[in-house]
Amino acid sequence: MGLIGDTVDSIKSIQTRQLLNQAVSLGMVVTSALIIWKALMCITGSESPVVVVLSGSMEPGFKRGDILFLHMSNDPIRAGEIVVFNVDGREIPIVHRVIKVHERQDSGEVDVLTKGDNNYGDDRLLYAQGQQWLHRHHIMGRAVGFLPYVGWVTIIMTEKPIIKYILIGALGLLVITSKD
Image 1: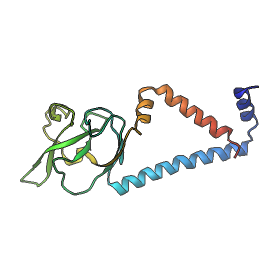
Image 2 (image 1 turned 90 degrees about the vertical axis):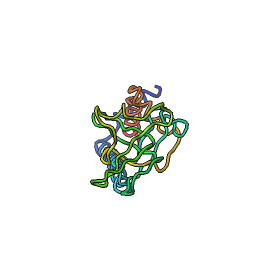
Image 3 (image 1 turned 30 degrees about the horizontal axis):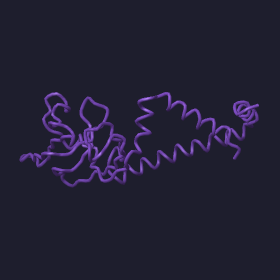
């Protein structure tokens, strides 16, 4: 009958109890992933402990598709560190190097200026209009490690949504037709 016919027959033969068992198993996997993510947030002190490099602005150090691991501590930010930051009005975080640190005398707070290693000038054009420096609340974390190329999975699924839907559908069929 073929692969498709066998899959359809398998789905038809699933009993309610087995379907419920598969749904609970899937729920446990999703819940476990969320718990791990929240635990990583607590351990690293970063709202996003893992990010994917989306552009070539940090080459040759980090290439598009690399995954960065972040950590945020109360230690002062220093020139030369690689930080991930959000800019007001933009959703996607940016990975760049701190090139200048400015400490305010009145409050002791530190403001930073960033630049991509592969960019010609600093990031002031990327910041919100009228903003000259990044403040502590803009910074999501410091890069403490990376995995090369692993983030391409995320990039491909974002740029080509049909692949994401095919993958989710295939995984869903696998869960439903599993005979465990």
